[in-house]
Each structure stands twice: as structure tokens, then as C-alpha cells.
Length: 524
Image (tube, rainbow, N blue to C red; front, top):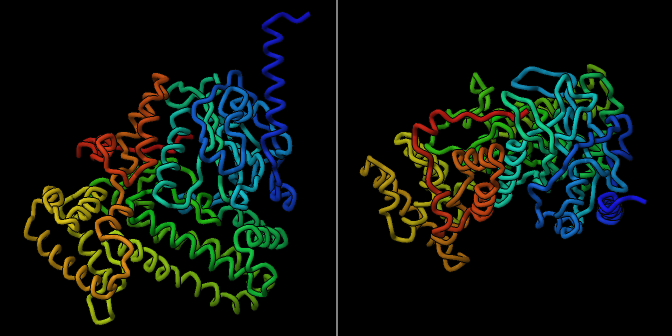
């Protein structure tokens, strides 16, 4: 007869098996429709999985049993020890330009696509592991992840989601009970990530680099069916896909720029077809406004500096265009490619205007303007540019400046003035802005849905994921096992527009010397 401990273990394992069978309803189109585009692979078992974070809201959105998944039985699944029924774990193949240099084979070295589910809104979502062990694409890495970088993915993903910016999100983080060896020994963890898909520019580059036109066509048609179904069966669907990706990336990067987000590693393997932010490695938020800001420890030349992000997005889009050119041409015949080239180049050349329009839409909202300026008025872009130049000249905190401009719209200029040393320059700009606001009011009549200060406070965050607060939380969790700072920070960034006393500590920038020395790391 088994003893009590064995019986208890068997009962717990039975609960895990039951949970695996009942919780997920997978429908895995990537595995089904694209054989040969991946390597089937199993996550590595870990010795002692324990729940560290569980995103109940996201679980409910996905139609999962949140109560069942929140405990130890869920941890066994999220660690990879128990693969749910219907899952088809696989490592995706992709290539990528990394800091401008092409790597023909990257792939999921420490990640696995577990499967796909249809959420409550009818949208298809990937569920994937990160840190689940070595795969054939691991390239010498250990395939593991540490607690700190995985909790960073949680904080930054939830912060971006709360700001309304398309992003992957963390469903769960579990500790593994085993060490991870980096510069120091760290506690291991596995992240479960949810995405609209994990298709990347680098996925297309993988097959284009091999001259595999048939697989490239199958991949493009899969991406169209998944993200742009209105293009299915149309004659110019592959050119339409390029246009759609361009629109999504232009809108995404414009949103990054309007909140001061620096991705830090905008390689083509981190550029999604869906237009979601992915891979929160050496990312950070601006504090004192400086377009040349770089925080990433591996970005020695400043390729991915804040101001360069729109240029890099266009460059990455051009790499996608190169892969799609034979599909747009209908073949890889040189004459056909030459004929098709101007059509593809036209999409790339239009990116700047798409980005500029998206950026200005966001800036107008941040300035409290509900309507575009008449053609004979000074363009609103010039007003926004002058504001940013003022912030840069005086090294003013980007987030606080925008938020306190909303206070000025409500009649209280003192908090804004406190940020600036040059009162005359600020006053001159404020006079210009107030005149534009008056004209906007006249143009809008009574159509405005809310007073200007209220509208501005709804788009200019009070709280962002301040870099020093993120580091404090991750160090406490990783080195002391103390999750309280992480949980408080997570609560704050999930309510970015709420200016309450509890939020106040998370709204203030770090001391200038702290920010000047701040560096981010990719976490691999």
C-alpha cells in the first residue's frame, strides 16, 4: 500500500491531469497548416514548479478556468511539466537581422509555442512558453530563464496594455526550483506568453534566405488568413499584406514615441506581423526628454536609440518587402521582379507618412486638440515639435511634462512651471498652445465629449513603468524572494492615468544621476 505522502502526491497529480484535460481548448493552425516550419519539441521538466504570478484577467479573457489554474496544479502546466491535452508544443523557425547583421537561423532557442486558443472575443491567440529548456535552435544557450527578466515581461507588458498599446502579455510566471547561471546564480523561471501570433519579419526571412518560394507563399497566405482575412483570395494579397503590416507597425511605433518607450532591440525577429510589441528585454522608458537616449547595454552604436525607432521600423519593413517581392511579382524571374519592385518600394516610401499621421493623431490628443488645424493655420505638428524641443532643451521629464500640461489646461500652471527654468520660453509656447486650443474650441462647437483637461488626463499617463521602480521590484523578487514591491508596482502601472496618493511614489522620476547610469540587459 502506498503511504500517505504517496497518496497525497498521486491525488495532486490526478488533479493536474484533470486540469490539463478540462482547461484548454486548443485549435493549433500553425502546427496543422505549416508542417515543416517548426520542430516539434517538449518543454523540459523542472524539479519544483511554484506559482509566482498569474494573470487572472487575461485567463478569463482567454476563456480559461482561472480558479483552477491559479494554484500549484496550474504551476505544473505553466512550468511545462504537464502538457495540456490538445497542445502541440513546437519551436518555430525564423531568421533575423540583429543590429543590422543577418543571422540566417535563429528560431525558438528557449521558447515553445504550446498551442492556440480562441478567446471570448473570437480572436485567435498563441500561448507560448519562454525559458522552457533548450531546443534544436538553442545555439549553445541553456534554454532557461531567470525570475527577474520574466517578471520584467509581466510589468512592461501589463503597463503597455494599460496604456492601450498593442502588446504580448504574460499569462503566468512560475519558478522552477533550479538555478540559472548568468553573471551570477539566479532563480529559474518560465514565462507563459500570450500573443496574437508569433509571426515575425524574421519568419519570412528564414524561407526567403533559402530561396524556398513555395514555403514563403504558404507562410504569407497563412499570415493573411490569420491577420488580414479580407485579403484572402485577392490578386494583390501579398502586396496587401505588406501594406497592412506597414500600417500596424507605423501605428505601434507612433504609440511608443508618444509615451517615451524605448524597445531597445528592434531586430527583425522582434518585429511582429500582428503589430504587437514583443520581447521586453533591454527596454525602458525615457525620463528627461532626449531623443538620443539609449539604455541597452548591447546597443553600443545607438542603432535603437529613441529617435531612431521610426527609421528602424521602416528599415525592418524593407526587409519584409524583400522577402515578399517574388510573391508580388508572381515568380522569381528577374524581369518580373524588376516590374514588381516599384510597387513594393511605394509601400516602403509611404511608411513615413503613415507614421507621421499616427504620431500626430496621438500628439493632438495629448495636446488636448479634438480637431485638425485648418490648412491656413500653423500645423499642429510644428506645435508638438516646439513643445518637445522645449523639453529637450531643459531636460524635462517627458511623462510629467505632458501630464502637467493637462493641469495647465485646467487652469493650474504652477506644477508645469516648476519643471522649467526658462519661464519666458515656456510662457511663449503656452500662449501659442492656448491660442490653438481656443481655435479648436471654435471649430468643435459643442461636440467635445469631455472637458479638455479630462481628455488630456485620459491619454497622458500619470504613471509609467519607471526604470528605477522596475529594478527595485525585480531585485527584491529575484534576490530576496520578496514579491511585495513587484505587486505594488504592477498595481500602479495597470492604472496609469489614475493620480491618487497611492500612485504618487510611482509617478516621480529617478534622480538624474541614477538615470544617467541606468543600463538594461536582454536577460538571456
